[in-house]
Length: 281
Image (cartoon, rainbow, N blue to C red):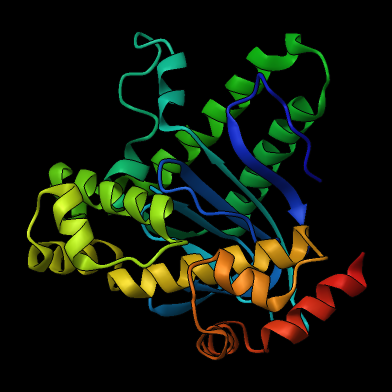
């Protein structure tokens, strides 16, 4: 279920959702995933990863995770994204360390929970959802405490991984976020390394090397994934759009090329995908 709550800090929120639910990826948000049951495949950069029951995944948003919408999807998961500035609401005297430290230092991290940890995690998520679903703002503080409990739960489970994690330059992360923001602003146009070089005042050779180092994919792989994700969203939300309309709206100027890229990434042609989405309405 998904309900907007203006006074809650989640940018996106789904509790115990059983479908892939393609949503726009926001590199400025931190992301959380938890698998309640079943298993599912996600594209992580250039690689495919399989998650199963008891897997908890945290990311700092730089590397996008895209669900692979395959027949027989059998996965129930909770996922949400939130602004890193959320940490500022917690009293520094109450928090001896940043509750977001695992997101900052580990960047993309999977934790496989034991049965006891699964019970603890699902209890916390149930409490978060209970307070999130309440209409009254009076429940906001109780929601924050439940959410803080989840962050501390993650922090405790991540302590060893953080001790062994190599340190990544904060400047590199900021630069990659600038590159992703550039792509977000211009993905519907022709994007070139020369444009990015001029806009960000960094060598295109440095940009390409740094982007792959930090995200695990090339700049143009990321651009392709972003365009196809947007195409899927347009087919879902604008069911009267034609394949040609969507092709041009997401930055392609050749319909045949768009169709090839879409089929390679999604597993079906854009026209097949469009018909499937129309049938759901």
